[in-house]
Image (cartoon, rainbow, N blue to C red):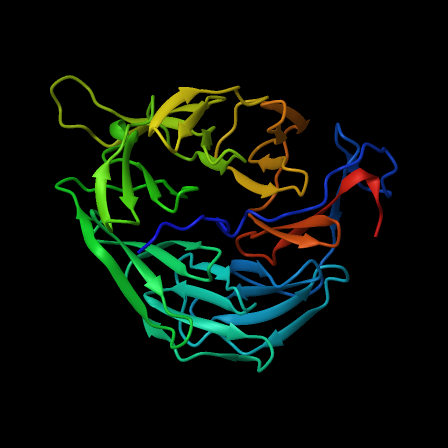
Length: 364
């Protein structure tokens, strides 16, 4: 199978309009350092256990919610009006993965089944079995691939057939003798797939690469240091930046067996560049401020918004990071809203909260 140019990355990576500096924000909103406005938005509809938010376009998104009794809704990202639609044909009890297909339908994989939502007919295609789903990758020729694992150490890639909703495994699985739990799944610009992670907290720097030409795995150059809770983005040159995160280890005492207490050394500002063609790592410009457990959203001018405990933006032309806001509590479900962005946050025991980001201080 020929290598493909990977374009659609993950739920959180979407093209948005660039921010234009302005301080004209509505009452109750906060301006960031580039003049964008961050506004908490009230939301009346009760939605518990927010699982996924996938945009159809800049005005509507599909919302998946509900523990066990899974509900589907269409959200108007301008008015925040919510319409209940056909429910996902199965129970979801852990975080699913989802993406928009080339024809506009939504593919969702959760609890070992996959199904496709067609907005035109307001229906879900009959669910198909799928095992251990971790990440969906979409390629420009319309192909969709799923990276999955069995029993914590057996990783494999499957290709999705849009016509009948079935899955076809590509090559042999990566069957390691160690219990790998990869933190990060990266679609490379040459069509390969990079897994970053490890096993047993102290070794989260391991990397493996799946070659689309040979449908086979090989060990890749390891991360320079151990990291978890990090994030990545792909540059215009096709290379990959891996950034932020923290380091965790088990604290053990004397000759006693490790008691399992986890030591967390806090967030890091480190950034490394993975050179796709040569397969080596090099240092890159650090984050503006250390952060972990990150989400991303791509801007149409090539910059990328990144947020965890803080909000910062990466400018690839300057190869630099700029801090926009500090000490924020945003969510992990970004969807486009006109020229800006809605960020949805699941609040345990309550309905989800919404923050609207408007570039350049535009109001809605």
